[in-house]
Amino acid sequence: MSATLQSWRPRVRPSGTRPAIAVTVGEPAGIGPEISIRAAWAMRNEVNCVLLGDAAFLAMTASYIDPAIRLSALSLQAVRNGGLPHFGPGAISVIDVPLAAHVAPGTLDKENGRAVLATLDAAIEGVAAGWFEAVATAPLQKSTINDAGVPFSGHTEYFAGKTGAAQVVMLLAGQPLQAMPPAGEAAPPAPPPLRVALATTHLPLKDVAGALTVEGLGATLDIIAHDLKTKFGIAAPRILVAGLNPHAGENGYLGREDLDVVAPAIAAAQARGIAATGPYPADTLFQPKYLQHADCVLAMYHDQGLPVLKYATFGRGVNITLGLPLIRTSVDHGTALDLAAQGLGRADCGSMEEAIATARRMADAVQAGLPNSGVRA
Ligand SMILES: NC(=O)C1=CN([C@@H]2O[C@H](COP(=O)(O)OP(=O)(O)OC[C@H]3O[C@@H](n4cnc5c(N)ncnc54)[C@H](O)[C@@H]3O)[C@@H](O)[C@H]2O)C=CC1
Ligand SMILES: NCC(=O)COP(=O)(O)O
Image (tube, rainbow, N blue to C red; front, side):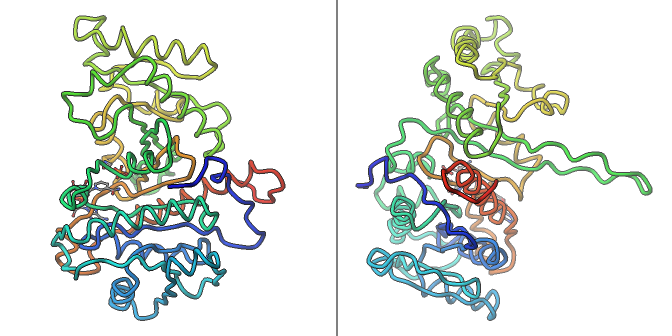
């Protein structure tokens, strides 16, 4: 990727236009193509979703979903030569990134692994070139990319590597579901959105403790505070930090990391003006009485934070990569090969719609911070 950091500076959105958001359609044998098409079509009046994937395969899929859906295909070279055309909302734009092999829904084929990666590369290229304001990614199958011969642990790490980001943070966010009130009673106020960031991402559990350092956690807290301000419009983000060990280490009797690493990182962040507190025992941290006074929880590892978030919000959650020089959001679920194998119409596209809507809100917040921008978040 040849883009310099300067070239990531977003352009001012022309007034009256829809933001262009790249949507990578993910693993072709999974539900990604279907939920990408459905979400792009449902949201076409607010967002110009540009699908990145195999144009012929997407056209066939769209025709089975609903013959009324219109797609306009472009070649990547045409966009490189002439920029992204300003189509209206009557059709979804597709930039053709051809697959190598026929797709059998539900059945993985490593022959297509590199084509999936090529969609990510095209999305990154398009943001650097100013075609897109953000990227929303449908789920891909990490194992297929590895089977295709490319070591790959996730979009998060891949986008970090390709954009030269020194450190990134995975954050999942969603609106918790509320129980229905008894008949005749008013519903209580909606809870605030739950945001859970991770200090470590796709790492075997045995390696987590060794990966936590005072400096690394400090950089993670800096990224969360910075991006919640600039991309979410939260003026002074409040971050609750979970401990690593049971009971946050029980004063050193259940592990020293909370005393020796987590607490000093929090103290140093506080000295830099960041409203971080903790470490709190993770098992009791996720209670409304704490969460209502917080903008984000920082969990120490993947399965400490994400089961809580997904239990509360599955199907409407969004995965956001902080610390990148671009906006990248994704769904809260995987490729659901089991559903894809059964045919179209089984997958819920709520999380994909929320990923696109979140990317749009973040793009609006960035636009609101640009000089000469008329857009307000
Ligand atoms: N953003 C991404 O690219 C992500 C990719 N993955 C990848 O997906 C692959 C499969 O992961 P799994 O752990 O099997 O999780 P999965 O999310 O694909 O499936 C878990 C269960 O949830 C259901 N499910 C998932 N999405 C659904 C939807 N939209 N509507 C209705 N039901 C849905 C599935 O049918 C299955 O029963 C792995 O390779 C994993 O790495 C997982 C999470 C995120
Ligand atoms: N559990 C989240 C996940 O696996 C998604 O990872 P990424 O592909 O967004 O890095």
